[in-house]
Image 1 (cartoon, rainbow, N blue to C red):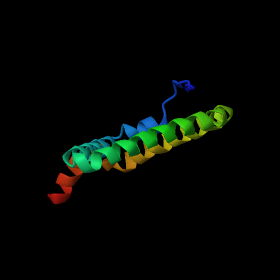
Image 2: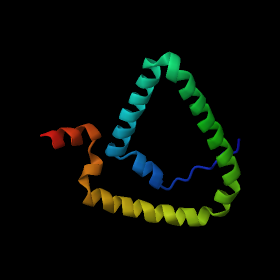
Image 3: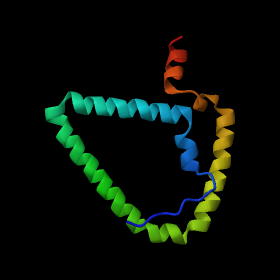
Image 4: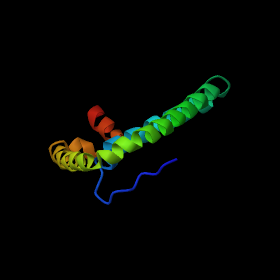
Length: 111
């Protein structure tokens, strides 16, 4: 499979994924998915594993197919990424809730 060169410039996607609200919510959902898959093993595990394999295959094919387009549009993507990073910084300043884990938001909402 082709590899994509890593850009030293910060990525807007990485910035979003690293937000405490996003990362903690992902962790909770991932844990719930794994627990559900394992709890109902004879019924859901084979179906989930087949779906996971399908998603991995589709992702691989999509990336391989899109790579020439991505490489051609690299300058435009870099500009969009820079703009997105700046806007994300502004959002973080205006919405401090983004820097709290989801568990803390739930506790604050209940209290």
